[in-house]
Image 1 (cartoon, rainbow, N blue to C red):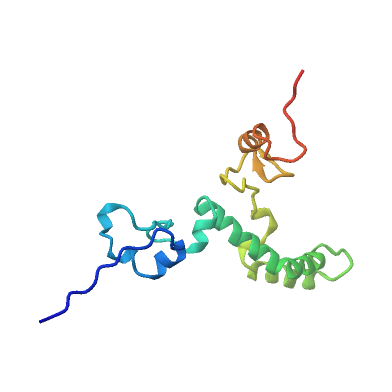
Image 2 (cartoon, rainbow, N blue to C red):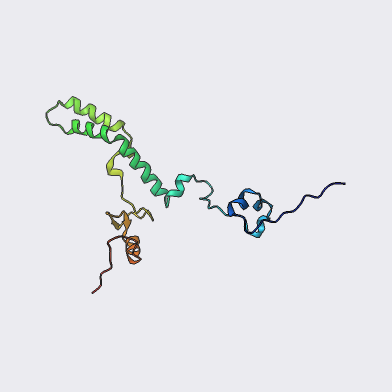
Length: 151
């Protein structure tokens, strides 16, 4: 005769960590909604995409990394291009070197964006927030030293 597996109920005084490690939650049917829910970003995204509000901000971050990577080289080549003393042939070589660098490594391709909403316009530069988000945060005392005008 087979022995029936003994059904155990968790001790309510037991620590919560033991409930997760003891396999108690694995025995609960999923349709009951009791399983711990972990937030998922979306279907075809990575964890990097979860950090930023939309794809435009991800693209902006990539461009900023490229600008930082090529900044020193770009600055030196531009100094050669704008120098009035050196011969024209060297300036032409410097022009070709600038053309060989990636286009997104130019600082003029960058655009400031709100860090919470990725909105490109109406930015309060000091806080890197759009004017609407900045005002909302100021209304709820989330920005230190900022107070609504009262008269």
